[in-house]
Image (tube, rainbow, N blue to C red; front, side, top):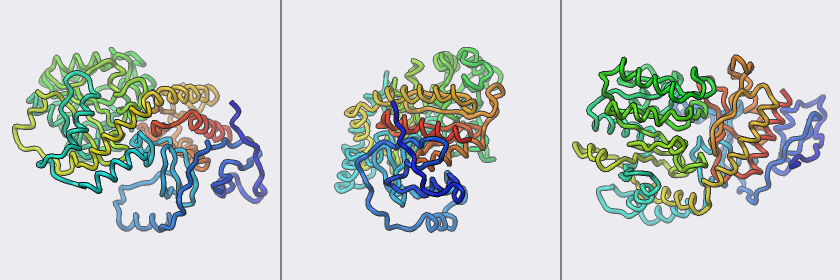
Length: 478
């Protein structure tokens, strides 16, 4: 399908570079600039214009951030964006310029920005009751827990709500240790599970780990089909877990935690057959199996509602956050009644976990996913997008791998396909250029050379075309 528009020269090339031409786009003609070398793709039409922005400038906000917020906070792009509005799969900056959001707030916005049904649920609950402790009864938490449990297999039907994925994973690991009476946990190299003390121990990327005590976690060889030592042979990777248990522990462990697709790690889909073999090994050693669904859950992989289902396993504990609330601070741990009972040995409490506004939002998200068939859309559009990205890989040697499933996709850039040399600088350059054309993507992987494509699940084929065409346009100019 032909999706390009004729180009028009705005200013003399002898006076202005392409980069400066791109920065002078107006909202009306933002995708119609002549560069004398090709055709800039046209963004899909969208029937919404944000109200004029009257707040502080990007420079003023950045100045306040530097003075009053943690220096650990960072921004994307050489010139940080000031995002002030959002609708469905699109974001708008302070100048009214529209962007295709192919990052989804780090795989968080699943229904779409400001989805009317989710907004209505939040507003209505806020007007009635913004907060009450779970020491009182309220139907919002019970209704959502019931709906959530009904989306999980087996006897996974007891829910404990938290505020984030880090909290959910911290709680899951503690439950595993309490239930088994053991301390040792198995995690994967390249994993990311959170930034508190316990989850930082389970995380296995040096960039996300501070020099603090992180005890009792053993990191297995990562079953990475692209860079892994055993390619796509899941059984061979699984044997390393058995070795870790035999040589690094007493022989009995608390559990195993893994993502079905590593998000921060660069959209690494675990080698086929890996989880069934590992789950069997873990259970023989007395451990519990924890599925971290913070990024892969809620229909994002398309083929299944939960990422772990793609490997045909049923965990003992499932953790979730991000897409669960479409941006509302919300997380959850779901397990069996027997395992959940360990928390009754002492008092365990979370002031905001199960907040009525958050759980009302969560229930609305589940209803929207069902009503608008967003899981099915993630499968159809994600399959189409992956096919187009794979075709782009055949065109450019810079693309070493295209992977993932549904609307959780990764594009790894390398300067040498045989050596798989990470293309770090090229990744940064292309990200900046995609931003100039109106496309926002994420970045991840241990080397920072993987584009993370995790848009809202309402993403369309037209959005997918624009994303790939913009990437094609940018790479052709390098």
